[in-house]
Length: 248
Length: 320
Image (cartoon, rainbow over all chains, first blue to last red; front, side):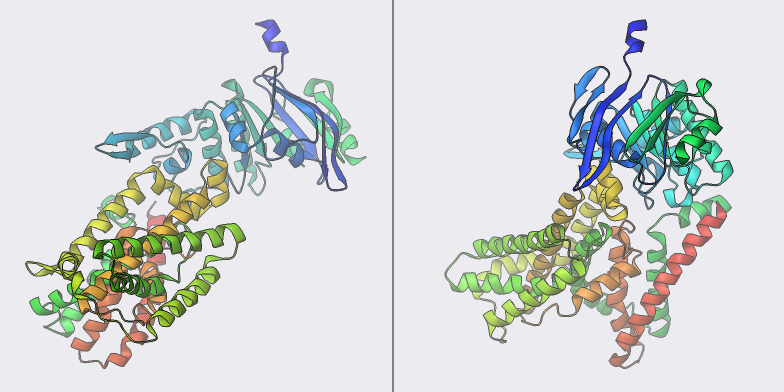
C-alpha cells in the first residue's frame, strides 16, 4: 500500500502549450496526490486555466505527458476525462439554472426504468439519490425539486460537488469556486471540499486569491507567466512567503 | 392549506390553465352562446390545425430555438401532395413524400443554425420567405383543388367521430406523446438542458446540436401534418395558408409559460396557450365586439400572461 501511495493520482510532466505565438505553458510540472487538496494559485494570465483545461480534456498539450494513477493517458475530449474520473466545475457551466436539482445531478446519466416499450425516467430514484448525495457533502435540503436559480451561490457549488462525489469522481477541478460568494458561503464551499478529502477524493482549487485557498490546501502550486514557480507543502511555507513569490 | 397552495402553484402548467379558465369564464359571462354545443363544436373543429403546430414550436422553444418557417411548411405540404397526385403518384406515396420533405426542411433549418451559428430567428426568417416563395412559384398564386383520389384519406384525417373531428384526436394523441417525451424521458431532460444552458449540457456529455436538429425536424413535420389537415378539411390548398402563424405560435407558447430564452416551459402550457389564442377571436365576436379588435386583445393577453407567470413565480418563492 505504501508504494501505491507514492504514485501520485495525477502527474503532468513538462507541459507546453502555444496559442499561436503566445507560449502559455512553458514546461509546467504539476501533480496531485491521493486524498489531497492542491491550491493552484496565480495571477491572471499565469496559465492556470490552460493547465486545467489540458487536464480535463478541452485542450491537448503541444508537448509533455500526463499520467493518471501511474498510467500515461491521452485525453481528446472532456468526456474522456469524465470517464476516467476527472471532473471540472466551472461556476457558469456546472449546472443548468432553469432545471431542478435532481434533473441536474443526473443530467446525461439519467436512470431509467422500462415501462412497456418506453424507457421511463426514474424520477423517484433521482429524487431519493439526490438527497443522499447532497447529505454526503453536508448540504441538507428539503426537496430536490427546487430549481437551481432559487439556490444561493454556495448551495449551487454544493450541488455540483455532491454530483461529482455521487458519480465516484477521483479528481475534482474547481475553477474559482468561491468567486462572487459571500464570506459565509465561501466557508461552506471549503467545508464541501474538506468533505471530499475525507471521502478520499482529491481536488484542485484554482484561484487568484491565495488567502481563500490557504486554509484548506495541503499543498500549493504557484504559476506565473506559464511557469511553475514551485510546489509548497503548507507546513513548509507561509502566506507571506507565497505572496512575495506571486508578486514577482 | 398553505402547503397545498404552494404545491399546486408550483406545478408549472397551472398558470396557463388558470388563465385559460379565466378567459372561458369571461366569455361565458359576456355571451351565453360561447359555451353552447354548436360553438364549442365549431371551435374544436378548427383548433387542432393551429394546436398541432404550436405543440412542435413549444418543444423547439424549450430547447432554445425558434422556427418561423412553420407557416410556409404548413402551406407547402398539401401542395406537394397535390402535385404528386397530379403527376400520377399514389395518394399515400404523395403524403409520405411531402412529410419527408418537411422533415428535410426541418433538418436544413437545424443544420443552418448549428453549423453557421446564425440565430434561428434569422435563419428561419430566411427559410420562411424561401418556402413561401416556393409555394407561390408552384401555384402561381391560385389554390389547386384537392384531387378526388384523396377522399379515403380525407375521412381518416378530418372525418367525424360522433361530434368531434378526427383531427382533435390526433392533437390529443400528439399532446400526450410529447408530454411523455418531454417530462418522463432522458431525451426530454436533455431538451430542457440544451435550452437552459447548452455549455453545461455539453459538459455532461449531452449533444445539444443533436437535440435541437431533432426538434427542428419534429416542428417542421407537425406543421406539415397540420397543413395537410387543413387542406383536406377545406378541400383546397391555399398558397396563403398559415401566413402569420409563426408569430401566433410563438405568442401561444409564451402565453403558455415558455421562455423566449429556452429551458423553461411545458407542453400542456403551450397547448393551453394555443387554445386561449384561438378562443379570443371567437369569444370577442360572440360578445358583440367587432372582429377588428382581435389583434389588440391578443396583444394585451400576451403581456398579461407574461406578468401573471412572473407573479405566480414570485408568490411561490415567497412561500418557501
